[in-house]
Amino acid sequence: MSTSAAPLTRAAHRPETVDVVVIGGGPAGLQGALTLGRMHRRVLLIDSGEYRNAAADHLYNFATLDGVPPEHFRARARADLSAYETVTTISAVVTQIDGAVGQWTVRTDQGAAVHAAAVLLATGLRDTLPDTPGLEALWGDVVAHCPYCHGHEFAGQPVGLLGVGPSTLHLIDLMTPVASTLVVLADGQVPEQEVLEGLRARGVELRPAEVSGVCPSSLGAEISLADGDRVEVGGLFVSTTLTQSTPFAEQLGLTLLPSGCVEVDEFGRTSLTGIYAAGDLAHRASLPMPMASVLAAASAGQVTASGITVDLASGVLSAAAPAGLAG
Image 1: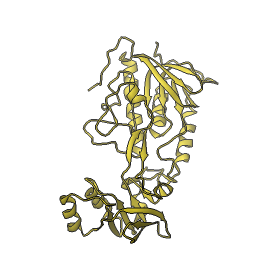
Image 2: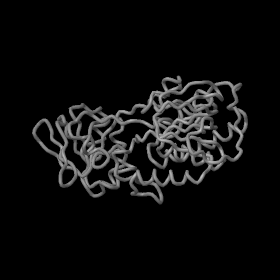
Image 3: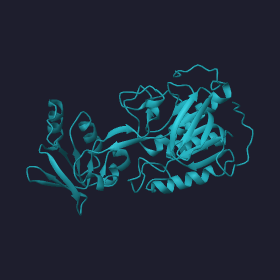
């Protein structure tokens, strides 16, 4: 198919053929679509309306947008996209991706089929919380998983860490300058000796009993322990189980990393030529996990879109191109 960058008049409806289909209306997808639009590439962004940070009232650690509600960020980004004639945004759920290099077809729950030379997956991850009663009601506010995104909001308050594992000491070191005190709630787990020694050296309290529940309090959260004690904190950090929010990585046979994320190169190329990934769902093999933040996802969207633009211009995405992860 042609990948000509000839100017197009904004269609009043969904186009049937584009250069790139962007799947996902979060920061990676929105920024990717913006970058492609500024290069006059024909883009269809498909937004399911489901977002990893939907539970959060505000996004943080993003210059000029620190403390802005996520929905305001998305609305502003979509308004930016409306200025570019080659970019169309629709609300739909993608149900299937099939085809081959340069000839991908993306199908939605509305019965539409769109053809493209490239597909950018910006579908993100989903967090599964520990099954502790009461966590979900406080998730995204008092209960968090990223100290860079939410740590400052707990400043000067006692902070709890639910569970104990290899990252416990790292998180303690990050939060020590922020929190008034730290307490590790082992939830019945037995810490490794190295962790125990690290806790003692840092003077951090360890509560070994199982956690039976979490509920709101005037400070933030009250944590009930199976031994009858209660611990009150201003914030509680938890480790979540990460899973791909869509089945496309598995269905397309993309190479996955031990983290469960899609392996990409420096420009978001996956193991399948013409399929790209940006945001929380993907990272390079040299990293243990993605840097999960709105700013990092948006940055990945921009870098990946620049890689797509280069590949479109160079003919890498022609139907005759070989598959494989670029270096």
